[in-house]
Image (cartoon, rainbow, N blue to C red; front, side, top):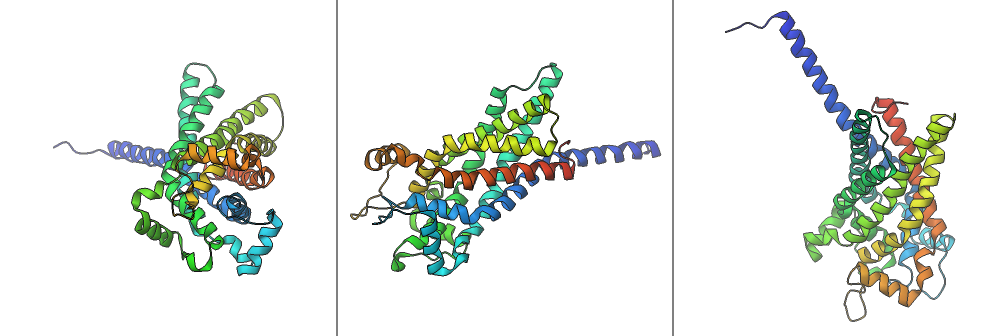
Length: 320
């Protein structure tokens, strides 16, 4: 049997090191994406809570007075203190651990592949390619994260029920168990269609437009990387919020699973929900609360993108 020389051992060592470095480089975008998403959600959770409550007031939860964010904060504070604003935090963090990890990691991986192919052809990555990467990563991530998204809506809206009907979820896993026992495991994907549509709309702006804008700013300005990132993320979030808000409203209404007095589901499908909101509450209902939605989506996306860029630079997954 041939013996292994010192040179052979050295080659094997270098191969293992290269293999390990390749695996780390592949995983880092997913880790950085998940970490940035979780940190960002922890910051904006109170705004998300108010946004969800605002969307449910109306057909799902009738009220005699027109709700405002300040009135809802006051009501929440009177019920259980300001910590009530963090109801569902465990579900929100789990959702980000799945959603942000999958969408940012997948988008980064697809963009690297597109950039590599463009470099080989001495071309540039087009906006259509960026959009395709954003739509694909958003759809995949939304499907995987839908159970946690559903649990988050249920936990945030539980306090709007009459006291006798509340589930008083202890954690996201308690919510999962309650939903499965009540409606079966498939029900964890309730509202999946508008969730995916919302995610694709957000990703089209937050990732594709962000990536394209940042590339153009880098090409045509001498601004710092930090300035380019902030401006690109702000513009991308404005666009994303505009096209995503109607889907976000429908997603929240479907996942709440409100019922009529007779016990039938208030909305049968995404199309039925769109039609009923338009006919019963008016087309303007889809954009009521846009400022609050942007206040929730904009800072969250900006924090996520900025942190993902920073973590990527810190870990060597991205170049400055």
